[in-house]
Length: 169
DNA sequence: CGACTTTGACCGGCGC
DNA sequence: GCGCCGGTCAAAGTCG
Image 1 (tube, rainbow, N blue to C red):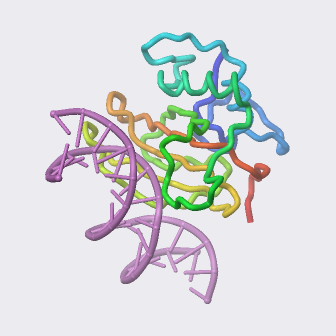
Image 2 (cartoon, rainbow, N blue to C red; image 1 turned 90 degrees about the vertical axis):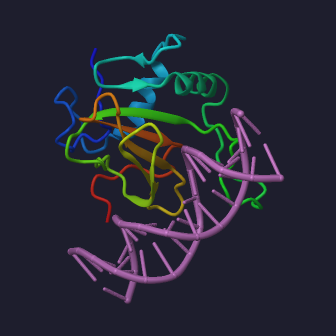
């Protein structure tokens, strides 16, 4: 079994292993695929294929989330705090994508970049993006894999609250 | 002109 | 308590 490295079927980076019709939501597919997997509790990186991986802490978080709360709520219930809450345990998915030239992968959603930071221990900066949809709180972080600079690690935080659209207006 | 990117400043958590 | 660091904000600049 092979897994996609990029949730966007339209991207040229996407392996020709999957064929989607226009109704298909690749992002959801990834979520489903991950949730179906039998992740091993190995302390090392949980590679499920040559392309996709889930970091160990992500795996455990993911397992917990999926086991206890399939639709974990994200955000401020109080509406008082404006900053990020570390206590929250949002759903996080990590994708490793071979992309030498591109940082931001077209996964079908519109993203707005809101920050860039040099990361200690990595020669490459990390890029921060939010979903452009104001009702959608999904964030993603993009950074290069230090051990494989031709690969890009994309960390998705949260799930999209609206339907996937290939050609968002 | 609106949406997006860039970039420095700011904030809060964490370790010492 | 202090400094480091990751994450976010927001003003200014850029682009279509």
